[in-house]
Image (cartoon, rainbow, N blue to C red; front, side):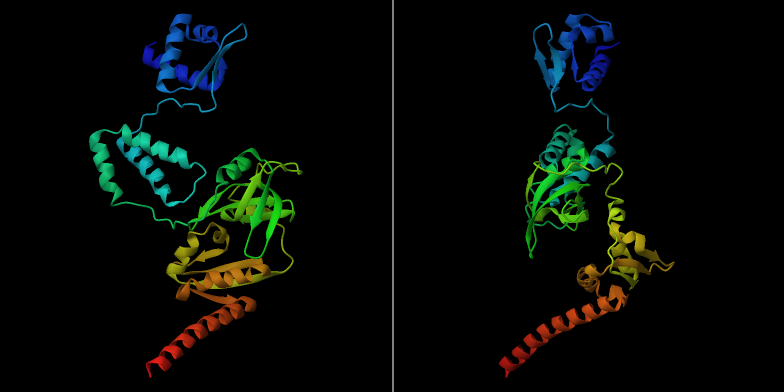
Length: 325
């Protein structure tokens, strides 16, 4: 076995074992202990975080920050990865902010000069636009870690109406329109709830509730585990082609979206009556691309909101006319 191949396989073995002795590795690779010691020294110089302990029960241990074995990328694959990570810069916060910057720095630093030049040209000609919200979301890593490990955390949650303390079991985190959201089981409400991460002002792992078994619950199905609200309304919304395209991008609307052959469509299905104010604001933003047919409560609230908005601007117009004369 060549030295390069042995080093590659050695890196994979120690990442898998996590703790080992020189003798174990020497026997596994059929080489001398001195050869393994030299190989471990080279891996350490390459950045593999090894820690050694002396004594009869000593050995080597890989620290928490494991280094993955080298992976060969084509030029196109490397450029694609670079710009995938590069696009994340539009977010004011990420669960892995420092790591994403480090990844791109490494990619760019070790690129051939001609590939660097290509990337420099692409930076000004290719991008993924995401609204940047100047809102602090310092607990994204903690919430994501709790979702992966299925842990319960205590949070302080602040809205314009109230500030509450709750214990939640996060399902995951996702971004939409520049905001970060964390669907979770709320022990206070005894149901699934959606929390906006910038409204979470404090998180601690000190809790009184035991985790529930939500291994099968994820971002794609968490809403189906919400308790049905007693007051449910049926809604129907006609959509233009542009309206359909806006709804296609919304994961939570997909089960209710129907598309015609000409590209137009409609939304149809049940939703909680408590969501009427939100849907009123949401569909007003569609302008001519959405026409709400039912429920009556939603149509009435949209009309009321539009009248109030129109009266505001009519009032300004009348004031300007009076000043001009």
